[in-house]
Image 1: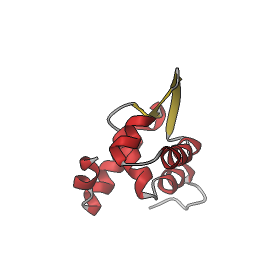
Image 2: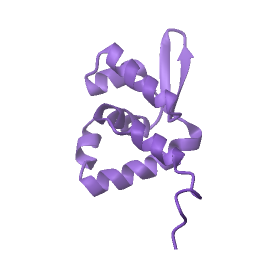
Image 3: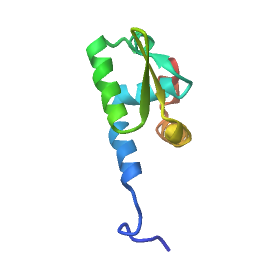
Length: 107
């Protein structure tokens, strides 16, 4: 029998789906699932301008899905260590279920 929602903490899952509920952010996370990237590489890979990339990365960071580190003038982003396995599994399940593997791999 399933527990009632009052007994379950669904906030982490809600946070994940809210942040991934945008095509651009989903594509960014798919890129980062392969490892850390400089924001300039994310911009180039997805054809984004700097302000758009920064806005989406800020939302992902606020949700606790990605971390950033500064290296001189460069900012590098990666999926947080604690969320990496969860995000990778969620991406695999969702992209398979909705047939989006090819679109995300193209990036």
